[in-house]
Length: 273
Image (cartoon, rainbow, N blue to C red; front, side):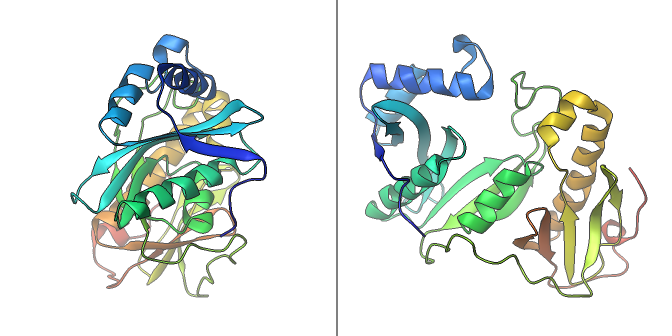
């Protein structure tokens, strides 16, 4: 994987002024007022002082990205990345994740976990294709109600992604997963709405909407239909022991089921939710 974006300075944060800047950046990205920032400067101060990961990315002396992570379980092997926010389009998020990866490896850790909204295509592509992380668990309404510009009006379903640090970093531009011809289409985009289908094949495709954040504002009903379809299909498959093995065409999760079944209720053909 290529190194940090050109011209960026990446470093851990230590002073309250730095934590204040990071909290303000999060508030801008998530569209909240300063008092509603996803992480306060005081919490970042406490986490950093306790030896956890709080870092920033600077461009020409200006903070353009920040990441907060803390030690998780299994103890001594895992770092849980709670939040990473960055200006889009210049490789800042990738640079932060690589910095976080090196920080964890230096401390003998073996994996990094984090949660993300499974409906956001760019995040799924970034996590699965650019980083090589894999979803392990579907978490329904994980954060409860959130009233920010990104999550407002929708339930906060998340998947827990895990990044195996013992594996070699993936190479940018890695080809999409080669989907077998007999793969089932568990969720298909049908003119902007989710069409549920069979999930009884060894490999199952789960489409995502073009832009769920815009859809929430324009058509809350359609956004809700996508939430329920992906929750039912991806959530059901993961709970049954299936694994997400790739992301196809920047749109579809590729799920592998080790023991396909034609009789399990979760694997039968369905119509629109």
